Image (cartoon, rainbow, N blue to C red; front, side, top):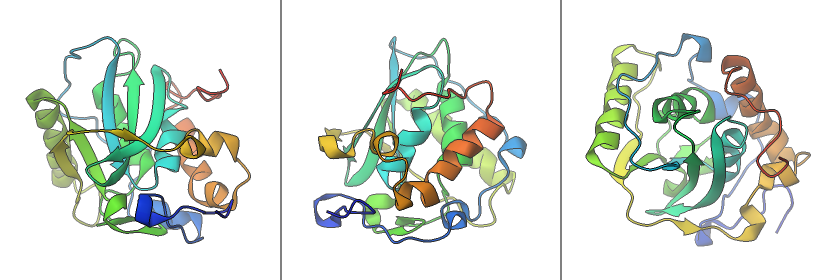
Length: 212
């Protein structure tokens, strides 16, 4: 596989074309103007988990590895979507804050069955919920963003029950941290980490989990 974007979509990996860094964030609003989620949840477990799909899992994982309070991030697959499972300490970062980062930094939730250079239903925007409380929180936030007209296009994020999460291969775990000079990572994912640092300075962690 190519070190640039060598992932075969037939087995769930990203098929990536190199484009300008604006492609991944087209349509996204300024993070500073982003509203807070309308509903918070009471974490049922310590630590808690959330599973999100926002395009190629390399970039989603890379962002959340820099979030304080996040204890573990792994790449995998959920309902045919490239997704990440985030384990976090609710006392340090909330479900609502993780959702805000998801919509304002991680991806463009208005892109249907694609994300930036990666095209296909495996790259669709998705929030996988574990209980009705999480469902209400996710749907309420999408409604709030829609009412506020944060995005110029319709939000297409799927909110669905988490049926199963399967780990991706070891070569995909911590990919951005291990390949910071990869053209794909430089163009598509490093700008997201920079945006996290700018708009969420209190939550930003300079070192990744793998470097800690």
